[in-house]
Image (cartoon, rainbow, N blue to C red):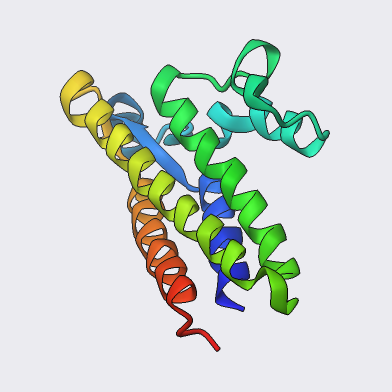
Length: 162
């Protein structure tokens, strides 16, 4: 059951939790201005997820009109979001006895991609944009949930979730 819940929560976190917060918006919020404090990864991955939900998922999904925004960071979050969607759907189907290990492999892949996306995002925040943006609470949540998802996938492959 946890192989269904964790990828779904990870996908929701990618879509709704702020991953980066600009320093200027933090300063304006301290002054009392009502500005948007951060942006979510949904702004980066929405074209790719729309194509995936329309059934146009292929190797070409990450190019053309379905390409995620913001370069490598957007591609990392988009890959995590698409595999989380697939892992959640396969998790429901994984309740059937012949698909159990396959769902664990997709859960593991989702966790690995989430950890990678968090690493790319942290690199972007601290190395490329030092002082301009701060990591948002969503970045830590995505990293933590990715580690939990990875551990759940490992346990499922080993067969400890029976």
